[in-house]
Image (cartoon, rainbow, N blue to C red):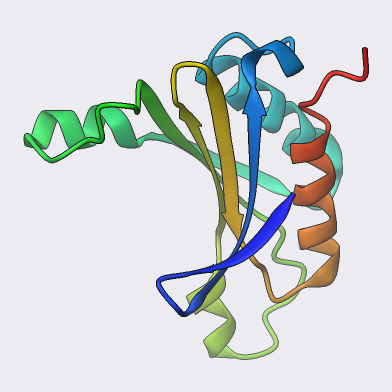
Length: 130
């Protein structure tokens, strides 16, 4: 996993995964993988899958030609509502992009270490151990 700051303000974790490094053949396979991790977590709740590629294409928006598919898995770890500001950082989303020869998986850092640890573990679990 790589940690970076996107647009000089958003802390992001990302993983590039060559297709020969994983048994996952498509974005939908990875979506199903993350959904199973979320539903098996016990404290996370699956919310939805957002087809970002399809949405942008329907709008006639710009899509990098390298991008073949792109979806977000939306879910929440929300264990507490300590104040109204916490709503700004919920729910969570993991982005999955097919770049032809590889997948790109990323998520924005959560304010809760346990959530980051879980998402990082799930993402790293995509890499086949051979």
